[in-house]
Image (cartoon, rainbow over all chains, first blue to last red; front, side, top):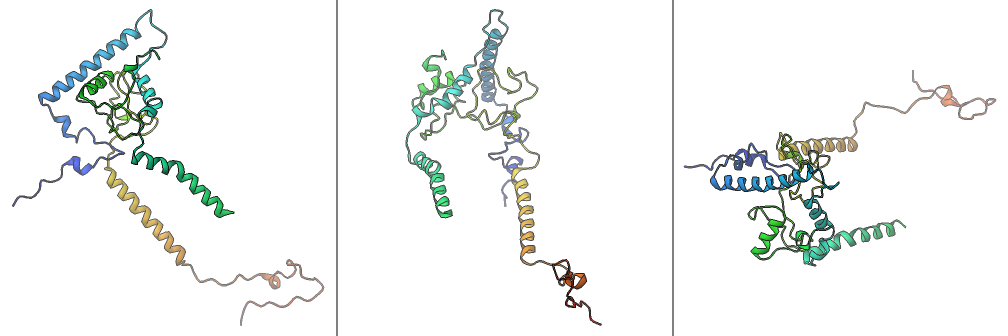
Length: 116
Length: 157
């Protein structure tokens, strides 16, 4: 009779929202299939192209004083100005809005009213 | 900023061409690019990167920004300012999280239960009321010094 295979070390570890799986336990780190190698090579190509752009600007004698990072600009834009255009009232968002917006207000109304 | 509108984040990508364009915009591979689910929460086409803090990145690699462990042009996590090295750390722990939380909660609950029981059922050596000298401190409590104080005897022979 075949028992189920014993739980792997990664399953015993149970990574969650607060800790991630150490790479030693992650089977993906030991995977050397051609797809993975090609993916890593593509990522390396992108990284090295970006690094070359950055180093060219950094070591340029006629360089501007501040080298602006487009990733940073995009991140700041996405968090500040891109939220309103991409917001859409859905059941989940309106529920969350009600909870976060009206909840504390009603809570304190009742607490202060009961206190007086 | 001087970036053109197509270089800035936009709405959720619907067609594969929009996804490819968004992946190229964020300097990612098309297979790696995964936007946040379209719940209307305001993420748009920003990529969903794994929720790992900057602590987990290689300390020995020569990053462009060593303190942030971040390269120029690399897509930043939505919660990047939370995952910097001064703040939240998601590095793997030596002991698994569920074991740690189980031990801690067991200890805390046992201690709290014992303290609660001690409040409900206190136990101490037998005590009696406190006995004060000088006729229950008659003069100190404002008794008239000319009158004879009532005799207070605390013993039995």
